[in-house]
Every structure is written in C-alpha cells, then in structure tokens.
Amino acid sequence: MRPQDEHDTDLLLNQRIFLVPMASGSTILTPPRPSECQLRVDANCQALPISSSESVTQFNNKLVKSYDSVSDLEDDLHISSQNLRTFSLKVSQLELKRTQHLSALNTGLLLLNAQVMAELMWLMEKATDEVARRGQAESVRAEIEEDLDDLSAGLFNQANTMVAEARFTHAQSKRKVEDAEHALKEAEEVVGLMQQRMQGLQDEKEESERRLDEMAITMGKSKWVERVPLLASSRAILLA
Image 1 (cartoon, rainbow, N blue to C red):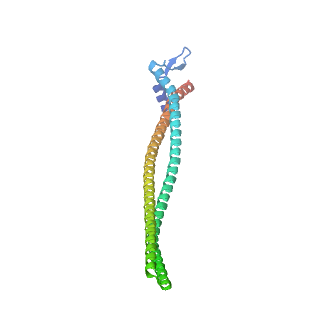
Image 2 (tube, helix red, strand yellow):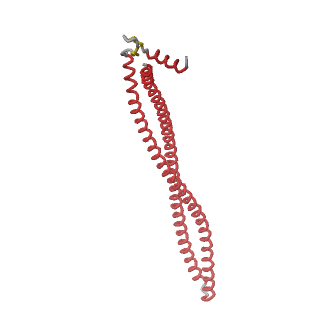
C-alpha cells in the first residue's frame, strides 16, 4: 500500500466514514451524525477566532496606549533634563557670583584702608601747611582733630554700611544657592520617578507583546483544527 493510501485510510478511520452497500452493488461513503459534543466543539472552534480577534484588538489598543504613554514620558523626561541642566547652570553662576563678591569685598576693604591712610596723609600735610602758614598750631590741631573725628565717623559708618550690605548680599546668595540645590534635588527625584514609571511601562509593553505572540500562536492552531474536517470530507468525496 502506498503512503498516500495509508494516510487516506487513517483519515477515514479518524473521521469514522462508513461504507454503505447499494442495491446496484456499489458503495457510498456515509459520515456519521455529529454528536452533541462534536457540535459544541465545532461551535467553540468557530467562535474562537472571533474572541481571539477581539483580544488581539484589545491588546493592540493597549500596546498603542503604552507607546503613547512612553512617548509622553520621554517628552517629560527631556523637559525635566533640560530644567535640570538649567538649574545646574544657575547654581554654577550663583557660585561664581558668590566667589567674585567675596573677592571684591576683600579687595574693597583693602582699598578702604588705603583710602583712609591717603586721606590722613593729606590732612597731615594740610595741617603742616596751615601751621607753617599761620603759625597757629593749636587752632590747626583742633581743626585737624575735628576733621579727623568727622572723617573717622563717616568712614566707620560707611564701612559698617558696606559690611551690612555685604552680609545681606551674602545671605541672599546663600539662600539662592540653597533654593537652587533644593530645586535640583526635586528635579532629580522627578527624573528618578519618571525612569521607574518608564521601566514599568516597558515591562507592560513586553508583557503585551508576549501575550500577542501567544494569541497569534493560538489563532494559528485553531485555524488548523478547522481545516482538518474539510480536508477529510473532500477526500472522502473523491474516493466515492
């Protein structure tokens, strides 16, 4: 017996095709009546592609939403990264301004002492000239002392004002640096949360793709089961 004949015989046995003798001596192939279980299986097989298609559509919709969410999160991450770089640049600028301010403050104090000494020398020269010109040492001395007292009071007031302004500016700079560091820390936390959320969405996307692959395999198997009875029926008719 040929392999093709053996295959046809197996199909006939599996499908339970009966040979019924006719009055003329010929025979026909009569398939048995399908049982209730067979009818239910056929109905389930026919309904399976529909439900599978609906499931695939739902998974596709979820996958599209996941892609949209990932795209939105990537945009938010890009914006947060830009804000983070901006805050970092502001912190660097504030640190530079703080350093320049402290340097200028120190230099200003040195220049202030030099100005005091120059002013005192000028007053002494003026006093000497006045003494030599008028010959009134006591009056010149009193005037010089008064001028020195006024100048010292003005210089000390100016120095106190400058120190107070410097402290106020330093406090403002320090507060701005702290605010910038706090904002930088919050931005880093937001970036971390977004990265965790993106990882979760990536896991959901991979799970959805895996389910889609499983559904595709299931749909392929269901289509193959439906084609087997049709193939057996066509071969039975050819044998008849």
